Amino acid sequence: MRLLVGTLTALVVVSALAANAVRAQKETSHGAASHTVTKDDYNRWKTELSNWGRWGKDDQLGALNLITPAKRRQAAAMVKEGVTVSLAVDANLQKGAAPNAVAPYERIVFQSGPGGAADRLAISFHGSSVTHLDAFAHRFFDGKMWNGFSYEEVTTEKGAAKNSIYNFHSGIVTRGVLMDIPRLKGVDYLEPGTRIYPEDLEAWEKTAGFKVSAGDALFIRTGRWARLKKVGSERDQAGLDASVIPWLKKRDVALLGSEHPQDATPSPGDIPRLAVHDFVLIVLGVPLFDNCSLDAVAEAAAARNRWEFMLTAAPLPVPGGTGSPLNPLAVF
Image 1 (cartoon, one colour):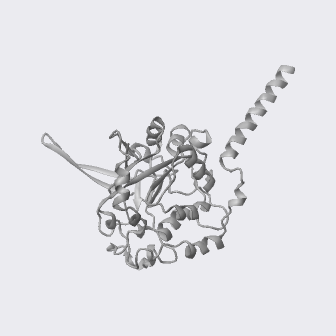
Image 2 (cartoon, one colour):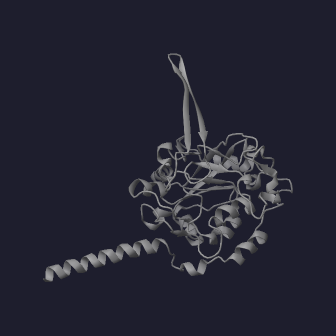
Image 3 (cartoon, helix red, strand yellow):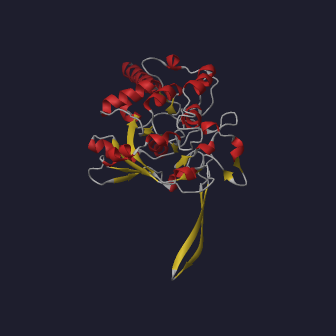
């Protein structure tokens, strides 16, 4: 009997510890309540934190203006070994990336024979499966996109007359910095719904020995793909809390990327579901890398104890496009 009671007690303790570990991921030492962003806060920030007009009323590059020749030279100096790591998710994972997700690639081989072969790809890249870069013509607040351009500049017939992906056709070369939040918290991956706060970002800076600076491409690892392989997909996701928005503005990041479309879901209160994603894209003018695969680059960075690298990315130069699939590269 004593043995049975002791065993049951141990099981209860283990279960409690496991539950506490999951809860600990979803909270900081300050408590989630101290980070609450209300609808009034969010709407006020649209004016207080706006970058509209910062680079001129006709600007369509947004925060990419922060990537100066000096910033590119700084990025090039990151290359010590010439080792490259892809930040794109493998196409084989994409069909199961989210509940009810369909294969985002439709491939037709229309020619095959002794002399060669050819195929055609149709790609539905927006959403939560394909690694892609969002252009400013992708999302709007109250009919306005980046820098105040009207949604009417985008039509189904001609695409985006303003803020299209074509504006980024010269490519992107800058310093990339990686924040591995599961590693910070001592877990393999973050559970769905786990929120990342400004304190987490600053704690990682201290751990990794760098500070995010103007013109950087900031990547946030949540362990999404590691969890998918072990547990399966979930409708909700780990990601950034809306309280990071002023922090991102202050640090002047040029690009933001993660393994989901940025936000932790579900959203608390009455702010939008993709509060960070939409605010950063529309108000700050920061293009977004959605659905990156950051496991491999995290391992490469950990092996070197170096969490910064040269980032290169080249979206397809499609006039009128609202974004582009792409294969970003980290170069160590």
